[in-house]
Image 1: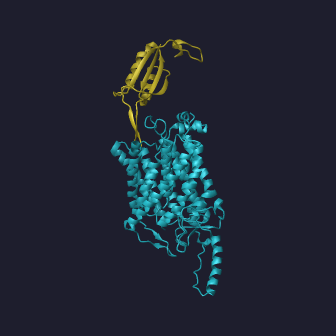
Image 2: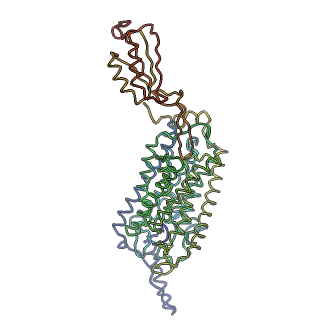
Length: 480
Length: 112
């Protein structure tokens, strides 16, 4: 295995292409040139039912991370009067993102045709899933192993659903609903799909050697992001930070008490996130094999270490370890291990989780209060910060000298282990982080500012005081 | 008739109820209330955001009793609700002007 999540590939198109190649080859022989090697054509026999079964289950697990897990995790953290607004934002974003993914997202993220910038973003050749049917195939990380293309479309769809939903925590309790949904559609199009393409798109193990340039920009640089540390977490975390800065703090921020209204729900949400994350990380191996299991156990150990670390820090500093702290640590660990899941050793994953938890603790409890930005539910402090620690840490824990999996060299027809250069890899990881931060930062800033100065981003002051549930949605969470 | 209002620690409610039954109190009204006195508040910390809560949860008991048993009622509450720590609460006794049982229209001590 090696890179990240993968490519798409149309078997029928290649069959046609193969026929063309055959006639060209015949022509070539006539002109006494060297015979071209037979073009590789993936077939239905290269699909394994075990892989399909696992990937469909994994996809459902990732959807569960959004609804209800993330919705409950966030919902429990806001005040009673805003509970439904958060649930509604997450639910609607998931619905809208799924439709956008079908309409043009998959094509923009996982094709390289019909676009002037194939390294940056795909075109619209597969818009509305044109050309995708039960017979078309998508590559995995192994030579000669394929998934039905629908499986890959579905799995990636769940990632497109959760990423914009993560953002809403940064400006919870004050954002206006309709502008948020408009933001979601445009942000997916201009930020998520290009970054997913840059990080995850490649021609696949059986084709890359013949088309070494057919990759996304960051994939081509050799950036390692197993399950979406850059694409999902840094991307959403930075967008959240920009959003809360543009929108400004909640009324009463740092003056009034704003305690979470139900840490019970936050606990349920965090726990379901952990379970769902096994689909997210172990599923990103795209096959039901040992590397999926490796990603699974790393997702277990890193998260356990991160949750325990946060509790220990609180025990030392406050003498009272809090449930919210441990749950936050758990999520920080999940975020940090995301890019490293398939590359780390379970032991180094523990270190990664612990370090990420400590760094996130500092940002969430100290940096935010010092700088006075109201990242209400700590989307930046956990997802961007944890994601950046994870992205850089991946360059370390992937080192085979530390028990990591290194990277796979797909430049030959049969993939082989690449030579690992840890310093160089860390630099590559930093570049990937930088490009992601810059790209999503600029796109998010432009979008939020445009919305702010046109239809407005915030609810009216009295609506914010009364609560978004009643004023934006006309209902209340709890009727006693 | 006397109207006895007692503010006590919530976990003492059941003991107090039993003690009041023992001295012949046939009914009471209980509410969950918040307030502050000499007892300091608590500090809650959520991801580093510290909130000090001055208002602490207490239970308020209200009973209307015959003048004759009022001293025993006060005695029963102050004995059972006492932990010796600050924050045990207070008991107020008020003269009660009238009482009416809605179902029967009985008034005065008969209505208690």
